[in-house]
Length: 330
Length: 248
Image (cartoon, rainbow over all chains, first blue to last red; front, side):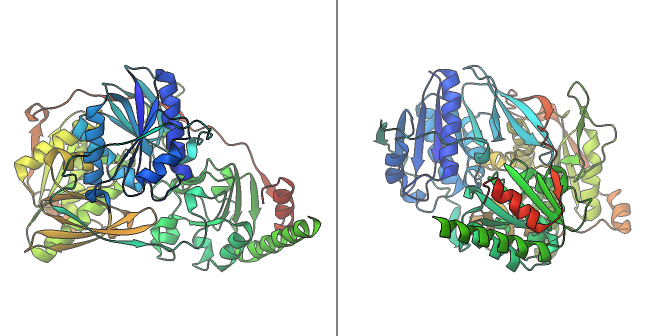
């Protein structure tokens, strides 16, 4: 048997794009192996989300909740994943490379004595003996080709590199499974979560991202106005986060979030390699920068050498006018 | 308090690594440094030691070349260096096995690790170490508040969507994120003192239960190039083009 298991820790009743992208990744590998792709859903939303995920061409949905998963720690998730994996015979256990997965997959891998690939962006030739994946390395400057040997392996995938599968009318079985009585580590305690309030779409889920760098001098007002007209998410370079102008979860880059929206508008961003690593797979990249030699122009489809405080309000006005015209015409 | 900081020798940040026509990494011109995230780990270890007292040990798994980076940690202020001797090319679980073995010998109260090494970018080893030792961990730390008497650490973790605070009872493993601190530079006296500090080596053959390699890097590739873009003359022209392409 050569099946795959995709792990979700859903935050809502409906799966997010990034969760479905992981299902897409698992299905592609399972297809090569001639097996199916099951989905393990953990936590309070598991059952409801399992019903929704069952429509995405999967083998079966395994759902489990547990007191230790109410505010799940990496230790508890790793214990749950390893428990399910050792009871079955999955060739690959996969998830989207969120901070939740980064916080539990390596522990689960060590527990299962299995190899792991991080941030997979391409699937190579896979068989029951060896899985082949490609991932970025060296600040996203190169790609590394990997082979994973053994009977079980783990992988996290970049959600931006895989397409969510299409939903169908056929629905897979949803099975509730039992987890061991103790999952959490006795010496770890969840204290509190401080969520950044979201006024705009989530960075990794948005179709359009308006991103600012050092050139904003900390004033994101023109970018926010542009983002509001476009229904876009706001992103930032590491310089912005380091300066304390925006919280870390706005950061796009190798050490922040990796995005691939339809349109990425970089304003006052020079384009350090670690930033490019986080956005270079966007479909269309627009760069606005005063410095004609900024490396960001090397990856831009459209470049404008200008002061963002001059250019961005003009863009906003032009888009607003175009929207109104569209509205009047329809 | 005994604190251990793990260190990896990685190419200097912002190095654009290149390949030969055969896809081999070109390394002759490359300068190396302490992996930036591990530098944060060393700094945090020093700050904790300077506050509550104790000892900081810098630990690396690698060839003799990694001694240079351990020297940097000593020059920053670490008290001792320890290297587990292996040629490069171990996979993450093997590195974690070597580290966990060395950590058992040292039995520190706290292990600080960079959340990621900027060469392979796997981000696996620290949590594998924690699992092999059956210790709790806290990932992506932007703040560590240590209660040395109660042997507890409250850690603020940078996660998707905001921050999470967790508490671990020591011993435990903490991985560092960018905003944890600003690492100090090694001073000249620090560099001179470093040469006299103890530096030990554990032979790779002494490491127990070393697994077979199961993750192999078989090659490197360039990123697919992006098509050459165009430079537009004005914001108005840019807006027209994006509207014409139905992008907005």
